Image (cartoon, rainbow, N blue to C red; front, top):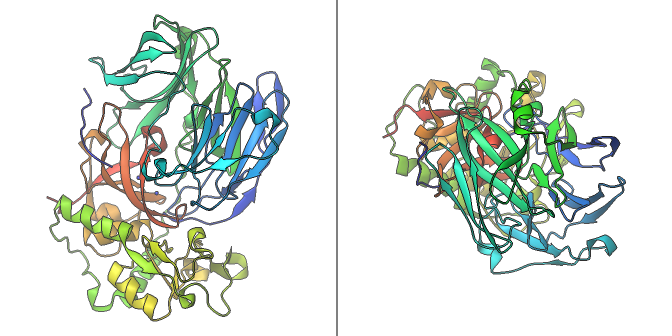
Length: 521
């Protein structure tokens, strides 16, 4: 049986904003999905895709464009859509959810940003956004605000499943979710009461693989007595990336799924069949998550050379694994997460350096989004820098000497020196892990030299890491307290412009391997 009672979640990529017109498929009808910006995937990071979907009402689907910071409302009955700019007064939004009659936007760290009233949505030409100061201190991206009214509890049962119980629209109900593929039911992501009184649920199951996280996602319709009436597998295996809110449940029983495939935003409806029909269907062949090939020894040497030049006498010796306690590792990571620094004009821009990512034109410095327009302001957390290994001390030192803060443009071309900008300072995902473990500079492809692989994700402890070789690595902080399996990480990522804390479900970490530093105690 799965048990956990612990704590708290992304690293670099080719930063190309692509305007997409993706196909929206509804069985028997098809129309175009409005433009959603996507940052394409590249070395050491998954792409920053769309920010998720929710049903604003029974016919309107709301999609978040996290690059342009726009909310897109699609009328699923005819394919028409409207686009609304999101105010930036309280920070950028990266995920979306419905709470009662309000649509809420959340930040990378799961902090409440804004909300809008959806009651008169069909008649609105503009949203009336508001900010609730009490909610702005809550980190809750992974916490589900179910549409079902009343108190809902989720508890683990003896069959490696989860039981949902409580008051559903004034009635006491109980729904049992058992494993469908021999794994463990790890999270209940959403729950909705339908017009006919039945319930629609979306949940995840994690398989017991020995080398990486493997997860499946499901939606099912249940009778008031809790009997499973219809079932569908959510096809997460067929896409490269999914947002936090990758499924939207409609009051009329329809289910919509969003994912990223080859840089295109896919939104489609999912047809629920009888449970036996669904379970007879063969699982789709997995695309896996995007894996970039090893950049090789030349890249390893270059990032280490840059680290040696920046760190000087503080550079760490090769093939030395100092003993580190888990507490020391987490505390060190929080130094990067919580450090405060003032952005001077000299670190914001340089003569002859345009903030633009186009390696073919020898332009490969791009300022992290959250630094734009922030000259003279105090910022929190170290910024992301492709190929970077800055420590809080070296960052402060070189900031005062006029180096430029952050760089989120990446490439894999050795002729372009892998787009590493010597004038920039900051840290990328593998640089952060190398620093907090106290070892020489490794990349996601070579971290295996400083670690051992765990056989079971449930063996993860604070200070371990989740690594996708050639893609991205995250420091594991802990599991959220409760009967559902939800991971909390600290990582350096392009999508949040630097070091941030994040929360994930198993489906979002599919393909990652749990690793442990060799000398941790």
